Image 1 (cartoon, rainbow, N blue to C red):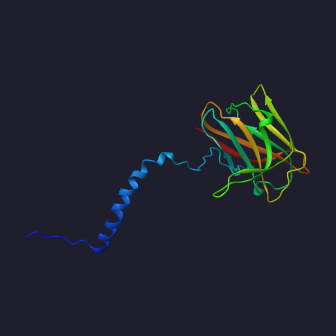
Image 2 (image 1 turned 90 degrees about the vertical axis):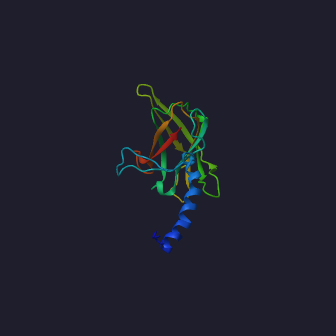
Image 3 (image 1 turned 30 degrees about the vertical axis):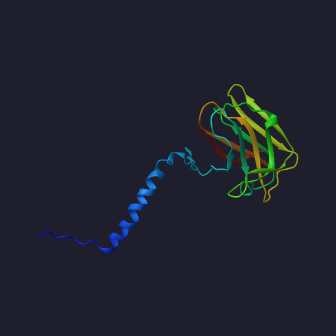
Length: 192
């Protein structure tokens, strides 16, 4: 005589939900390479490193791009007289002074898009050291950038470099009442 085992009720219940869930989710696994995760890796992770928020409109090589480097209220401790943006050496893109601006910005989210609300008048200076090929942008706002509840952004309109990779930009700011710039934070831009 052949003995049959009765499956417990909870296994039948689980089988009823697990098998259809697996069948419906397996076609979705094929599209997982299209997902863009907001995950950032940092090689030199020390306590002095501050990760700042940024937004770029295009991440493909050689495409026209608009990059927003944000300064949120939590990123500024005092009024800023000067901002220095250090551009990484491998980020080979032509910088044009008319395509760089400083503005008061509304940072976009689920319902809104990122948008410059008001241009901040400032003198912009592009520094290039030919011997080391280091580049930086110095921004001198006409009035100190206030420590307030508003967010500000440096906006770069550039063509992306020919090489893909991670590019780490650093920012330094000169607080009101001091003569030396201090580290504000870093942004890591991804070009595919």
